[in-house]
Amino acid sequence: MLNRNNLIKLKTKNIVDYNTCELSDITKIELNDSNLAIDKICEFMQKVSNPYVFRIGDTPVKVIFSENAPTIQESLLRAINQT
Image (cartoon, rainbow, N blue to C red; front, top):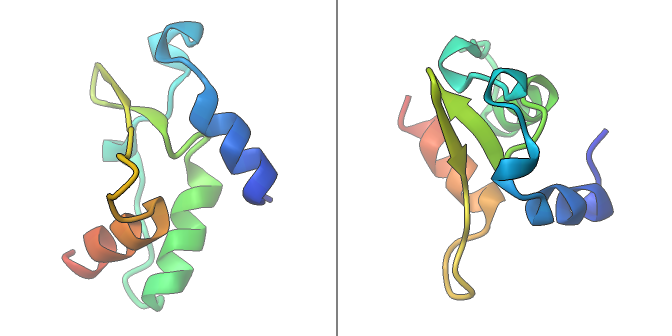
């Protein structure tokens, strides 16, 4: 289970520390449409190894938020509610 300390550690990981094929491909992640948004976030977090470093197809992605930006939780909730 991811907790605040684990998320902080994952956030600081550098994308070059990963082999691209080891990263979760989020285009392959399927979420249960009948779940509430918070349940979808939990399901996504269980399926992705690191919510800050993943891949989309063959492209590695590192998510970085500015100090004034919404939190990852707010961003995930907004993204899930749009699907």
